[in-house]
Length: 312
Ligand code: SAM
Image (cartoon, rainbow, N blue to C red; front, side):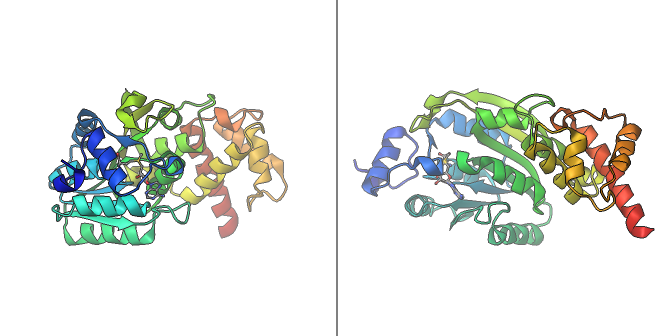
């Protein structure tokens, strides 16, 4: 029996290979096209996200539609975004019976730093016309956009409450990293401000096809944007400070901040040193050793100084 006569979502490796072969599609490494071929893992992902009829789900990278289908069977609506035209056409065809699955063929991160505004608009529209629904992101994220996509979702306006992601282990390690480690960086701090992070389980490379060279893991981010913005009212300043610090990991925190030319400093390092004193931060500390609480406290103090300066 050929794939076309079955014409359903390819749920086994042989069906997937046949579906791609019939359409002349070859998996592209640069787009992170490693398909999840283990049905138990797919079910685990959907179960971990506890998808139900009150959920709206964004899936980035629908591939051949195997995860999308399971999401569509449980969720209120699913929005799937796929950059690859061949895979988009394939998933569009095999997912046609699922009227609550909507697919878009585009680069979800065209602007590099934000989720496509058209995608955001659709999701916001659904949430507005159906009060009481929860927005979740469930995705086997392509490696090339994992970090910017996670940051864009967390920093963006969408009221996402839960993310269940399959990521390369290296990125999961960075999400959960503690201060002073080499994995600790912008991603760790932003993720830990916005979410509680739980690693569900690591995945051997063989649950994907083509088999990647590294391990992956399923990770849950319980997102609370309201709480994050209460902790850090001046998020723009927080993000500027964090990014500046990790742009020059070898510099002391004091020097990184000094180089930022913040409005209230006017070339006067003493002002910054006084802030450090008040917070009990050692002047020679490297930014990479400062924990999340340290960054939020520092942002609060500096924000107050800027406001004082602006108001006075
Ligand atoms: N969901 C499928 C699965 O679990 O088997 C496929 C996951 S595969 C790791 C990642 C998918 O993301 C690929 O289908 C790839 O073409 C797509 N992709 C890569 N970059 C993308 C982008 N910028 N926007 C949307 N989709 C993208």
